[in-house]
Length: 129
Image 1 (tube, rainbow, N blue to C red):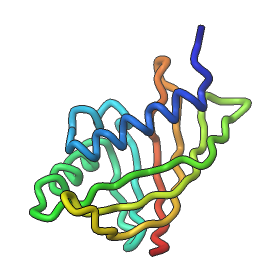
Image 2 (image 1 turned 135 degrees about the vertical axis):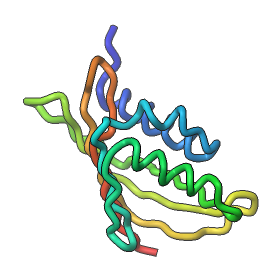
Image 3 (image 1 turned 180 degrees about the horizontal axis):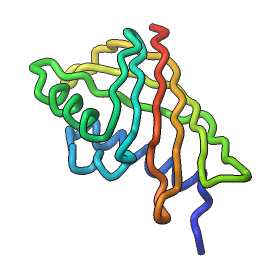
Image 4 (image 1 turned 60 degrees about the vertical axis):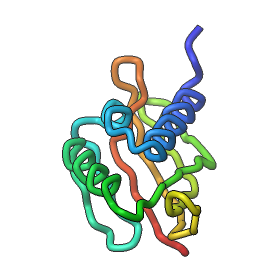
């Protein structure tokens, strides 16, 4: 029995959140397409490509005071004509150790099913707090 796409995407998102919390680059890599794009929430900086994102996360994970980001999906919208989906939700970040809130907002992610797995093509963040 095949897993419903919205459940598969939610499971992939949970895996991504765990990888961010544990600073696991090897777990992040297979969740991104080679050309994945991230648009940051505050400065709208664009990080283009899996390699560039992994380098950015590596720098982030090495910081003395590290932020842990969590994305919480509110909705998953599946395309009826292509193996793609939009995820909408809320994101937040806290410092490791004491969980001091740093920033939060909304996000949208575009997913694509490739080889039977859902992977992120793009993420767009809006900082609200």
